[in-house]
Amino acid sequence: MTKLEVLTENRNRANDYVHEVYELVKKRNPDEKEFLQATREIFDSLRPVFAKHPEYIANGILERITEPERIISFRVAWEDDKGKVQVNRGFRVQFNSDLGPYKGGIRFHPSVNSSIMKFLAFEQIFKNALTGQPIGAGKGGSDFDPKGKSDREIMRFTQSFMTELSKHIGPDIDVPAGDIGVGKREIGYMFGQYNRLKGGYEAGVLTGKDPNHGGSLGRKEATGYGTVYFVEEMLNEYGQSIEGKTVIVSGSGNVSTYAMEKAQQLGAKVIACSDSDGYIVDSEGINLATVKRLKEVENKRIADYMKDHPNAEYHPDCSDIWSVACDIALPCATQNEIDEISAHTLIGNGVIAIGEGANMPCTIEAINLFHENRVLFAPAKAANAGGVAVSAMEMSQNSMRLSWTEAEVDERLKVVMHNIFESCKKAAENYGHPGNFAMGANIAGFLKVANAMVAHGIR
Ligand code: NDP
Image (cartoon, rainbow, N blue to C red):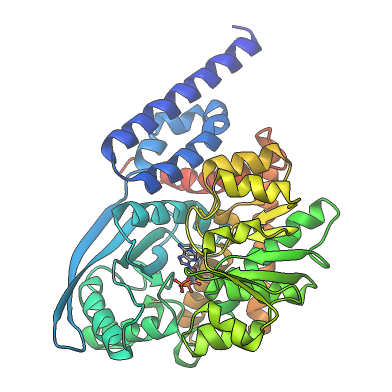
């Protein structure tokens, strides 16, 4: 056979393999649309890898990597303030432990179901690999809605949730953290309950703890800051920078707040942010002190921003935030926030870069449009990996029983984000798609885990 014939044969075999395994995943998980979306996005990137490395096909890597090692689903019964018994459903998906203990957040949101848990845990495999830290991948949560609940209700619910979860986690087994609806208060209640059940103090069982009680300085800021560091690396690569650019950020929770803070620190003007009710536009630049007070202290809605800043505008449809003209858009709220229509609007308004702070906030169609229109695209697996990277640093500090300064953590975070950017860039170049950082992130993360899976044998 000529060299060209061999290449063609390898390419065809890779395409057939990816197609066959995707059909298998579809058959096994017929109603799990978010999980299927996440697998399809990865599979599309990996064709050139299987063409170059048929040994991964022989090792059944795709068949194995798409099947969670373990899924735990459990009842969470608790009593509300009126004495009424409430029942929610809890989950923990322990997806892959080839690189370390399962690691990934806990989400409390009414939309939580098996598909959402599995897509998040699946994405976490590649993200955690990209950080270069010794962490495997998991995700958990509940369909519990923290909105409108009293502090005591939150405490009773989280204690009940942890009573079951505690049987399945541990500092060397599975180390959860926060996510949507789970901040340091919820982590604190879960940590207290875990230690009460174990009769000891296992600092490394959860991350995202309050820095006054075993947490890492800089963890709260890490995901948002890391997203902006990645976007800055990407802009620098093309001779640009975030300084002087206009930015819009969806959400006003943990990731959004610190993405806005870092963008402002680097000289950008953030002009819009949102919550699930609506969005605000402040052409003077968002006043972050007001947003932090409303969201971190008073538990209010973003519409309340107008009371302090009457010259700003409030719009009641949060999904419309992408119609605000900007240079850089940072979706930092939830999955599938930017679809094809929003992507067209952003492109039409001259957007130059997208940075995914949330997990899978752009649909596959939207991502394709950004690439086709030469909009720089920072994929979630790479761009928001700063949070889990600092969580791994929290685990290290807990093991060593010492605390690094905020400046030290931030310095390490910058290095991690730089290294992640370089890995994505190189993988994209090596596999023939320079500048496609989404493909680069998928390939670089995959290679790291796949090599460990081969080394550990078929299991
Ligand atoms: P938070 O709960 O702190 O904040 C979520 C924000 O998004 C809130 O402002 C919320 O508004 C808003 N929101 C939720 N759903 C919608 C919706 N359908 N439309 C518009 N806005 C919405 O969560 P995080 O900031 O922790 O997480 C945000 C995203 O980042 C998630 O995708 C998460 O998986 C991802 N992520 C988080 C990490 C972390 O370290 N926290 C790490 C890596 C990724 P409202 O209050 O009205 O619900």
